[in-house]
Amino acid sequence: MKIAVCGMGVAGSYLMARLKENHEVVGFERMTEENHDSICAWGSSKSKMQELCKKADIDFEKYIIHDGKNLHIEINDEHKFDIKLKGLCTYDKIRIIRDMIKGCKVHYGVTPKLSDLERDFDLIVDATGFYRMYLPKPSNDFYLPTYQYKIEYENKVPMDDFYVKPFRGITGYFWYFPLSKNLAHIGAGDYRKNHVKETDEFLKKHGGKITKTVGRPIRLATPDRCEPFYHGKVVGVGESIGTVYPLLGEGIIPSMICADIFIKNIGNNEKYRKEVLTYFAIYSKVLKFVLSKMKGEFSFVKQFVDLMSIFRYMKKNEDRFGMEIHMRDLVKVAKA
Ligand SMILES: Cc1cc2nc3c(=O)[nH]c(=O)nc-3n(C[C@H](O)[C@H](O)[C@H](O)COP(=O)(O)OP(=O)(O)OC[C@H]3O[C@@H](n4cnc5c(N)ncnc54)[C@H](O)[C@@H]3O)c2cc1C
Image (cartoon, rainbow, N blue to C red; front, side, top):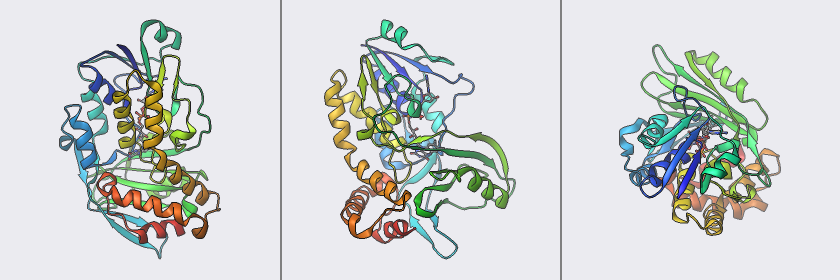
């Protein structure tokens, strides 16, 4: 088939690498080639990334920047604890994206018109992430604003490992993700819109030189709230159809899994739709929990069953999440 892949983020670039053998694929990216970057904290977990990248002939190990040992959580001054990590790392996300599309035809600095794409291609993939440029609006969208700096530290870095500070009522969180020895991503996303203030407060307290400032909304609406997944010749893959784990705002692995499901069902949109809805069904429960916390409506008694199924899912997938999962930690977060 002649396939247009719009958006060279994690989902689009992974699709290019996986589809180029058997199809004629052409990529389109809104950013110019020189400015092409990935607005993300670049955190993911090793074992699942290794498995997914291997299918695209990419050795994930070569891209790891920081291999985490502990995730420091600070709920407030009195409540701080560590989660032991099992593979959570930061990696050079833009370098992998570039390597995945190496040798492919990609047009940079363009947003092609849908009518032109429809004329020239058999299939159009909307991998434009939050912007969802080529599909109708999601049926029941929900997203948070985010803000992030890349910081260069002159001497000592303020944190030795991953650090997260959830905001009251888990309306969002602040993150510090280590990159190389003297670099880190610091940023936040917040329903109550304190994300810029919290990021600036950390910067003021710990110093460092801003080398990059980015921000964009992150879609937390899960796939069941992002229909339609396909329309005419267009099919959505990745964050465009809501593949972000809502408790963590983690979208890299879910978007690649979504691309995997797409490849498996290419040409059969309804089968793809059903498989996405089934695979990501648990995400809807997670979003329900997150929304009830954000709105101050969470009840341990009423939502105990949901909380248990979230715990069981994460416990079973510790390697996939890259961290040890304990009920006591989930309860601490639920109480935050
Ligand atoms: C600040 C921030 C930090 C994050 N940190 C993490 C993290 O540490 N770990 C994690 O797992 N997830 C993280 N996420 C979420 C994760 O980055 C996304 O969910 C994931 O990258 C989605 O992949 P995607 O390919 O679907 O979309 P994107 O990565 O958003 O890629 C979409 C691409 O499409 C391009 N594009 C947009 N519009 C058009 C258009 N009209 N025409 C052509 N191209 C277009 C964009 O420029 C971009 O290159 C973070 C998100 C944000 C906002």
